[in-house]
Image (cartoon, helix red, strand yellow):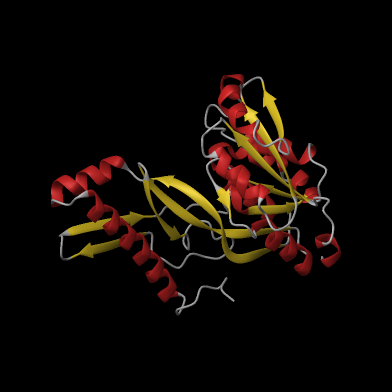
Length: 282
């Protein structure tokens, strides 16, 4: 691994599918600023998105941009076709994936590649921070419940949290879905990415779960990096916020604070069920 770190030649690729969202620029910068050199391949998914994407991509000539004439992400396929294609189009030894509304912490690719090499495995995955967005405001909670890969969730499927001072009761219901590694959290050896490429497309809207199932089916060896190196945006439900404001006489600040405490309490309950320490923590 040390020899790799001494060369400026990228050994890692990052693939992004985009429709030209403004958040693409943050995604690009997060790849550009990685602690190891990475080649960033960005696929613009459909002619109707060329203009918006080009305004961003023209500022970053080091990014390899491909402009697709048709939109492959319709009918819930999103980035599936592009992520399926990606392993056959890049030359680098390791491949990461990044949605255009997410971004990496600086060390994500280096720590994932090092984890693969040091543990002699086929792929690695980081954990993620969830960025809960409401308008121009947000709060951040670590995801210790959903995108945790092969670690078995210890929480019940339904969790209720009561806020005695305001009378608010919030309920979190979790389906018994297949294990999840978010698409942006994966880094794979190229040969493994090729072997599971079709799983992205076959999985459609649940492509990341389908990829993990395929990796498991072929007995691919993995390691969890154990760090929250990926940032995942998710929009807060406007109807829920409006309902809490109207029904409990709360202002916007109070509602967002309540939701933050709610998600943190879920994490705290989960940690307690593991005896105070998650299995991926050193």
